[in-house]
Amino acid sequence: MMMPPREVTSTLEVEVTASTELEFQIAVAALPGLTVDESLQIVLNDQAVTPDEIPAGYGGRIHRLRVGPGRLIAQYRAHIEGHAEPMAARDNDRSLFLRPSRYAECDKFYGFVAGQFNLSKTTEEKIADVAEFVASRLSYVPGSSDPIDGATDTLLAGAGVCRDYAHLVVALLRAMHIPARLVAVYAPGCDPMDFHAVAEAIVDGKWVAVDPTWLAPRQSLVRIATGRDAADTAFLDNHDGGIILHSAVVTATVDGDLPTDKGSDLIPIR
Image (tube, rainbow, N blue to C red; front, side, top):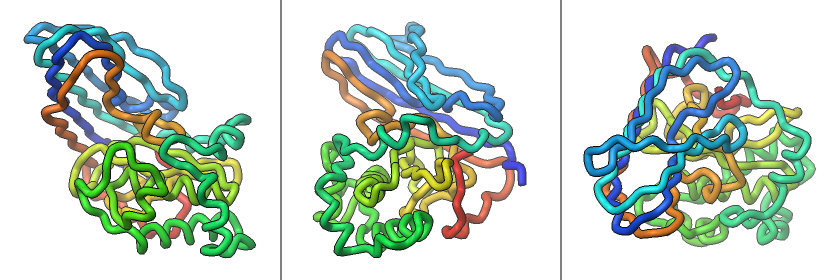
């Protein structure tokens, strides 16, 4: 079944208080199978500025620029047609995405998963068990977590937002020796609408999406950035002076009915 065209937008308003280098990851990943008609406009103090585009891996793109103080507005829009080809695991993916990372500290969970889960099950069954565990253990509460919280903090708090859910899934799966990573996405149907984060895991040599928030159907997700955790996929990074993010407005829609996500299917981000 072909996905109807998808439309996504994001508008970020940033106050730059001191000269700095900014990196945006808000553009749709450039992947085989997708046709993307897009525009990115960045304006500082009513003057257009042009960022450098840097490949970020797995189709992702970083837009980087040096700016002085002032009011900056970044506006992105894209019309997406087609399906991205399912992403196959690369030779080094198993090595990279089994390691502990800043927000998915899987080395703290080896004993926990041994006591909490049946590790003799198949990979698919263990992924389903982790998704069910995280969905039942956490409450989705905007503002309940701190941007520096990792998977351990989230488990102890029992609440978080999408990135917290994804980090806990990733940490638990890595502790089970299942390669897992975080993906920043546009998510048609997401409520509340925002940039969304989901986990991915390798099953039979392919990456599949895992999202225990169930905020949006996985079939309609649009990949933006892919990495070990949110440290690699942030929509805005600041590398020098001061900034204040005043607003981030995101939209993501499908031209037609949203697909139905049964939850139990293995679904790639396409």
